[in-house]
Length: 130
Image (cartoon, rainbow, N blue to C red; front, side, top):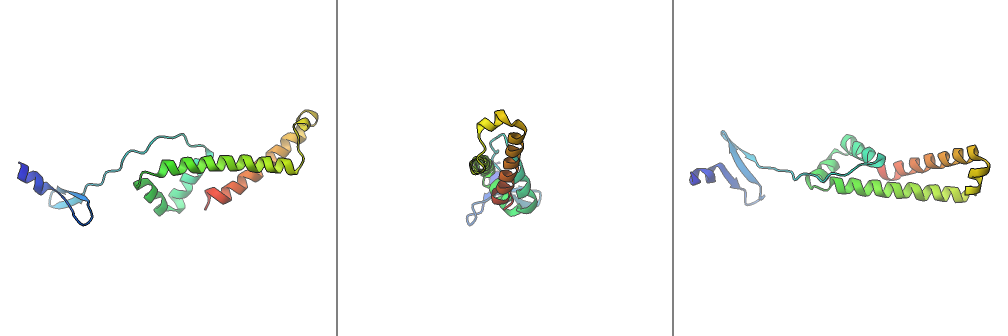
């Protein structure tokens, strides 16, 4: 039985890949470790979708090396921080204050929505769709 087990499996010394005999063929015994679970936000989902559709090799390499979730977590954290920084910068440049929120609420909300849209557009071009 043990001799048969040795014939059914072997490790290629050159590549280090284990092969298992299936019928008349030897198939590589490739096993992917389970990916850790994370909660993806908007930017994480957008980056993942972009990788799957447009950067298939990069996606596969990250997935096979068990680094995809860490990468997506880093991208979404960076994107969120960058959006907040850009909004803060735009707010300072336009002299939009918290006082204006109380005096002219519609103007303040409109400007903040405008700043958020600008910041997200910048982040999408800088981090997500590259």
